[in-house]
Image (tube, one colour):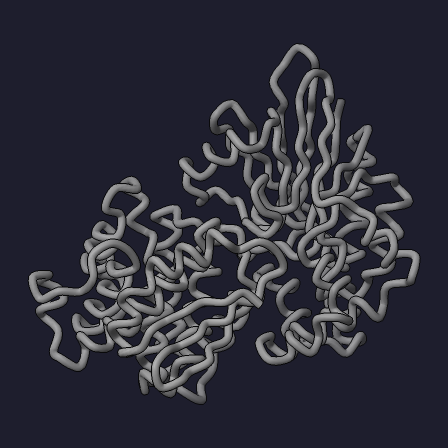
Length: 450
């Protein structure tokens, strides 16, 4: 049996048309679609209709679910989402027909089937969570955990927009890549062709296709959505990649260019160490939210916020040498990374923040900490305390915490955790790891689910 594996079309009809045509020429017998019909592209309703017309076996993606929830969530999201992203949710919802909205709402988050004796799981993100991205950089130990959880021989996923085929623990993980929003600087549409025969292991070939990018980009511009979305598909990059590129190309301010250079080096180090992208992104997002919410207490500014961002992005690179003492390994790797374009003081702050995301608290017996002056030590305590809590709030690596807010009183800080489901493990871990933040702020820290 030959199957076209597709995902992450994101409203890009020209790309989908090219993929379906190519799949037809290859004589595929079925189309399996792992979600995210809509988002940023100008053809959400047409994409849903096209996939229904070819009778694709589909599941719902995390972006699809956000669009479905937009009417009830828009007030809450206004406070924390970029205006252009919020507008994209609204635009997609408004340009889906009632029939298409109903179809998306009826789709499951995963599907299971058996084909020629091969047990197959279709999921958007991972077997654990539909917003966990799986890529070539995903740690093998994490894939082994997911293999044990999957109860399948073949896991087909999307979400990260990056093609992958890796076998771990007897399970073949296949990421389809993205039809409509390719990443990594290659604007061509991507999908996979799967062959399942009774007398051979499953075989996978990823296919890159040129398509009418100009038509897709111009349609986005005519729709009135952000120019960034058109440029993203023209360049073949994600939203964050595009924002960094824009900052780097600006001639108005040297600081954004410097930060873009540092972030590029940070991301290269992350890729080299095969850091788990989804967990890192969530921890970094929550850490920066905590920094902003607690600004009246810590009094730190933009340079320290950027140091926190870098420390959060690098906090788990030590896993490249194994789980044991990986926080110390992260410290050592950052201090030794000559390609990181920062001075020794800032390098030490970033490395120390990453090191203190777990286990022992800062102490003068730690040589790297003792080398800092008193002011920088306090900065490390604040930033490290924030990072410890943020890391705890993604204990399950499943983006369980949607947003956080802080209520500050004379005696304590109450951290309100907005969730769409169970988050007991996250709160337990965050409370356990709030020791450094309590010490740095001089207040009790309590957590509550909203």
